[in-house]
Image 1 (tube, rainbow, N blue to C red):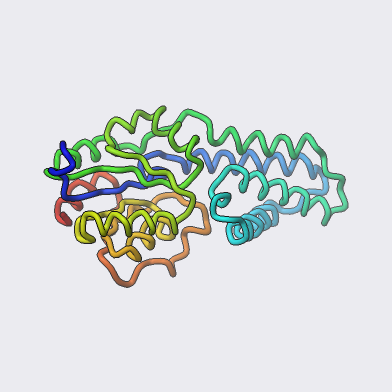
Image 2: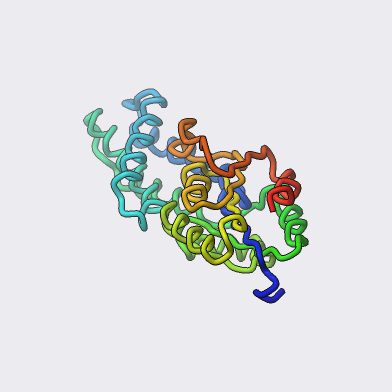
Length: 249
């Protein structure tokens, strides 16, 4: 299809919209939790204290880090290592290097293959590609090397005309705003699972958005983020997406 034939643009988030990342993060979370418990041994606190500590530290890192570091493995490594150090200090326990190394290894392992495509995602994208005059792109936050590896290993790249990797939701806004000027705001749609990093950037850019709720790190699940205005549609499963998009285009 020549660019002259393209009149509409649909951008897809990658993690937990097309690729099922949540199960890997849950597994990694449990592995890191067990590593901290191992390091603290008999002086370990209740598990809830460890969970609360890592969430507080991670939220602070999300707030404080520059945007190009926010959504990287390094942030998660720092969050878990700080958690272990913090609780060790509270309990007056020496910090063990092998526990720090174990936490780092678990986090890096989280970003390695395999990458599982969400059930129904490929079928939905194939059906959407059949729409007349539509261009499909991936617009994802993360480390470019890791995100493109996910697309390569999952073979999703075959279905998309372009892949754009950015650092932050603000970068998604900038990209979608530019595309709104190129295609017209009524002809651009963002599809994603994060209210904070997919839906709000799209609505701020003046384009439409389709929200597919799915597992997401706790900082992105604030109910107060639900949009109150803008062309915003929620679907429960990706199977519903082709029909929803057809009605929006």
